[in-house]
Image: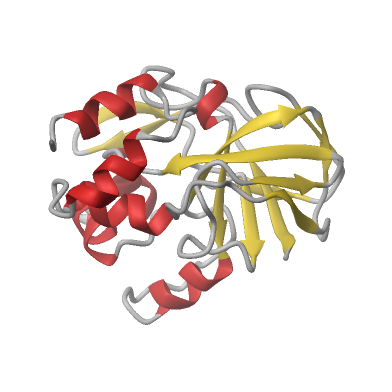
Length: 210
């Protein structure tokens, strides 16, 4: 597993459907080594801290396998990495294999998988498609939010190594499917609620499924 692209961006205003909207979803690849802090990667900044950022959403990773999938779904010329607003474009770090709570060394930093990314309407702006959020939900290609458990630095081509496998047998993809099915599999809901490092707002969202 490795980092294929390191992407950062700061808030900027974009016109969308007759309004000016502030967003940080527009990210660009950088080649130099960047510091990883508890809340973000150097040079990156979230626009709406109500739904983005914070210690449990410090780093967003999206695997190249998702890009390959989307290229068969959308007609688009520009597939530059960072397109989905991810900080790390990865190879081999897939949603169906990463468990909630597993810890990975990325560069000299350590990151803990906390939850999937659930999209907001800003993804419509990034793709220029008013229904992109619905497409994103339909395709179930969410990506992973990480908490930084050890600050460090990261660069393109850095190896990604799992240093601690979570004892909780719930993958990012399990989490996604359970959420979108409104907790149809109660056994998965129970497993998710048993995860001690689940963010409180996320816990409340799953408690209503019982």
